[in-house]
Length: 481
Image: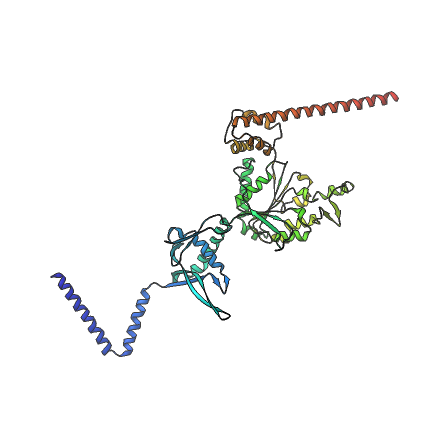
């Protein structure tokens, strides 16, 4: 009975509404009727959420839309958790897999507490060219949000997407090792291969204190873009790695590049024909890169000009001859001033966030103008193996932290000059037998100690013989007198 009464009540309500509607339409003037419609329409629209929609198409007047690429990269890192249907791919020269939304999929993003809705769509468009009609797929992203977020989207959200996309692309790219060569048929000054060197700060055998100092300096450098702009300096930094051969200079360079995730440009100065070509090579490098010049003292005559003037006659016998103030090496006419301008001239400011690393076995041979801050800002001395670097090698190659003959090793390390490369070569030959590896190192140290003692005896013997000769000569002069 209650059910029937409810239906009767609803019927009466509908009848009343229809009566009022008819009465309003028939008895009210048309002007009042239209005013009421506008009023109720306004109320209805006011209560509805006000949305703004932005379409970001793949192409803009036949040109690639960079914002579309940035959005696609940005959403690829976020849509996996929300979208129902995803596309999976591995782009060329990319390290990681990439997820993208399929057609008509949507995704909700949160930014500073605001919700924004993304969706992906494709539309088939037809174009005519020379009388022929053809269709192509037009892909676009659709961004929807409340109208009150419009300023925030324009001033903060879209710039945030572009910045995040740059970081994702940078970390996902395949890093390269470049080398300079003569321009090929395509006019390229650099050729490249994938950079896959495994050296890291965990494996490089240098003193831990020095290692931390270098890492802190690198992080300080990459985080100071605004500082370099404020003080009016190009965003670059120069390192000089010096020390005997085999002390880990190349491994440290690879570790720095891996730590910063930078590309490497290995510059061979002997292959550069002129200062002009050197400048072209510089401006062809990219930001976030390490420019390396190994064994710079062997590549060009960049020795101290004061010493050079004192030994001008001796320099005539040198392979590098002075020609009009420039030094020629195997047909190269790159000068010291050209190298200085390369490191610290106006053209060095092209691009940014670059390290320039020089290596040498003989720091004392380089001109002081090249060594000053602003060109070689940080000088890093890599010397012979000490206790800490030996333990790193022991952990890397033998996979041990301590050994019973380690104390004997520590006593001899200070007496013999063994480079990390020397120790590593011994460990590599017996990495499956830890005890043999340690014994072989000790035997090599003892052998070198015996050699040092024999050389010392020979030197003492020569000194004694020279003293005897001088004494005999002095006695003979006295007898003649």
